[in-house]
Structures are given as structure tokens and as C-alpha cells.
Image (tube, rainbow, N blue to C red; front, side, top):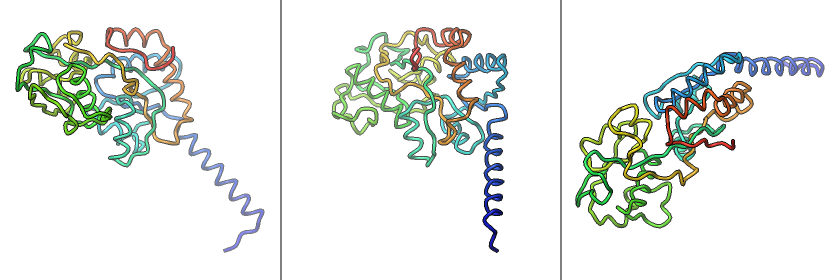
Length: 269
């Protein structure tokens, strides 16, 4: 069937109107934000502050580091907050996602912790060390072990280091890889473990401020990001919520209370 030029124009205009309306509808409901327990309390404060300003936000808490990205990719939630850029890049590559960093949140210290030793040099010959089992956070643990002088990594391995990049291990340490959220519970069995203060605080296994060595926040790549699906950068709800998170005094007080001195804002203040 062939349509006249005026009719084609009218149909095109109607289709454009429908598409525009559909796009607007995508941003009309509550903003759905996914996170994990390590980031939830300050976000809960941000949700409450958003409500005061007329923005409805639903917080969805996940127990692993895979489902939040799957949920954003599938459109089940609008944004997540739990990962840094190296982790996101690896997730996009391995999962075939189309996710992008939208705005920075915070950067946390991580440390090396022990319930058996009070100093790095007390870790024994043949001791056991636990690091994260995902390729990106595991690299962060290995870089911290190198900073401690316990291992040497292949030059240039950097943020993608694996145990195969270890070129020197003078104490013949046994390095085991554990799911990152479970590292805090491994301290009873190992001599030393990579640790995330927020998970240690939640698990109540050790004082998160008493690491034998911190990473010193020297890698800005590890700033945690608000992550969205590509093409949704113009969502006005996102801009408003991120502004609240970054600039609300109530949220800052919540961040200070939850993380203490073991975090820094990742945005320009």
C-alpha cells in the first residue's frame, strides 16, 4: 500500500508523538535505585531527602555483585550504586551489557586485616592470604599485597593483575580467592585478608579502622559510580537524586556516620 505524502507526514508525526510520550513515561514513575548492604544506609537517607523535595525513589538491595547490573540492563531498575569503573568495564565485557557510569559517589579505603597478627612482618612463611575472587577487586588486593612488600607483580600488570602476574613471593604465601562480600568472614581461617571496611563493620568481625595497611586511596579509578543503561543520561530524576546524594547535609552526615574516616567523596565539592 502506498500513502500520499501528506498522509505519510501525518503518520510520521503521530509516531514521533507516540515515541516521545513513551520516552516521557519512562521517567514518570519512582526512580528505582539498586545497591548492596555496603552502600545502603547513606542511600536510605538520600531517598528520605528526595521524598521531601517531591522525588519518589525506591531502593532495591541486592546480595551479590551480578544482579544489580543485570537489573539495570533489563530495565528492572534505573540505576545502581555499588561498583567502580574497572569493575563496570569488566562486567560490560563479560556480560554483554550496555552500561555507563553516570556520576561519581565515594571512594573507600580497603585494607589488609588479620585476627592472628598485629603487623605485616608477622605473617609467617607459607601463610594464607585471602583476596577477592573477581578479576578486578582481586587485582586491588594483589596491588595492596605488593604495597605491603609481600609479593612483586609483573611490571605493567596494574589494575588487571592476577595471581599469574606474581613474579616474586618470598614467603611462599598461599593466596586464596574468596567472594568479596565474604572476605570479612574469612579472617578466622587465614593469616591475612583483603578487607572492605563497610563489610567488616556489618559483619562485626574486626574494627575496620585497624587494618595493618590501607591502600591510601591512591587509585581514583576505584571511585564508586552511579551506573545506568546507555541512552538514559537525560533522565531528570537521576540528576536530581545524584545532586541530593552529593550535596545534602543530611546525606553527608550519614556518610560520615557509616564510613567514618575511611572514605572520600569522589566528586568535586
